[in-house]
Image (cartoon, rainbow, N blue to C red; front, side):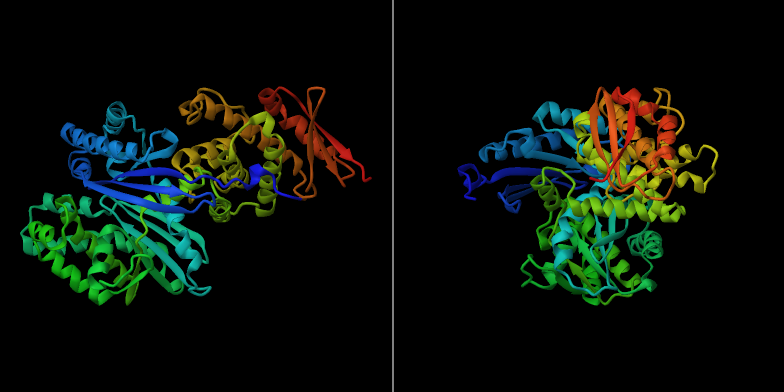
Length: 525
């Protein structure tokens, strides 16, 4: 069949921009997304800011710092207009720990919006890990470290340290620690100790967190590589290997990095600014960050570490290339994390997986009824997988225990809001329907309240379809007939058990979608 003219028309590249409001600087990357989804960076800009100094010292961002940030962002707006990047869907602005932890973060974001029209999104820790995973995926796919080799991806930023532990392209651990170079510098200043003692105090502070990291990643469980991200370690790698092309991974020997770190720590901020062409905020953080990388590598027993030129902005651009949808690979990582959590609480894995799969089928077949996007499909799948983990605590109020465990666990890739949604759906898999007085539910806007109710209704139907826990229903088709949802089940002769379960648990579906559910046996043709 010949191609139609429309199918032969090449997709025009689109230009986008991402702005990262960090602890010591505001950085912007402008990229071009080709028709095949590939991204080419056109320009990168960076200007210093003192957000972290304010947030980690006084807990809030000063009026002067806010106005300094507004000035930077206005200048970025002018650059974007030159690229004809003006629409909101072409620009994404994110802020990390300094803004996230500031008590006046809403005032900061409102002021930026009023002055520039830019909508700032404060990324939570899970979202930062998600974007980091998006950024490093190309490197992980290219590496062939052996089946037993694990890769620990670490970025020691100004306010926090983000870690991803990956094995065979699967994220097996992720966490964000409150260890950051600028946060550490502010802590040291509070000690008012003599300069000669600062190094010892700094090492003690860093090693407390590294002890936690080593416990979590367990070096004794097999070979491990350390892949370091961040401007501080990139500076060191480039200085130690001037021929590094910045496109591949640099290999840096730990003893070399330690010697370079010693030199940096012995220099004043003024000397660092002149020697390495840094801004003063960058000069104040480079030493503590490099020391943390050295101590982490030594604690893991490594002789070298890998350094990547990938940044948070690369991950943000890749997300924009996928129009912020969750890719199949990313969704797989979320589900894998949920299964690991379920095993920790000794869930009935066969039943949980089957209910999750039935929920997914129902979600797709009822798309016209609920009109929820793909993100909610994954939230529903996670809730279905984990709806019974509350039994680990107690059979009494197990649905409430399930919600608590989901909300207070770390599921890779899910934001705190996603944790709340999944927890609520699991909470409503039985017993009472959602009520405005219920904790968590009363925090949601109307769209998410409706989404939770719809997902819980679908989950109750899926649970009823495996009431026998025999996993005997594998196929189904849904059709609306006479204002009823008719679910036809092929190759199953007796549906009396499932029909009874639906009569007992189908009320929420009828309340939500305005139609009862009827099961029908579909005879073989």
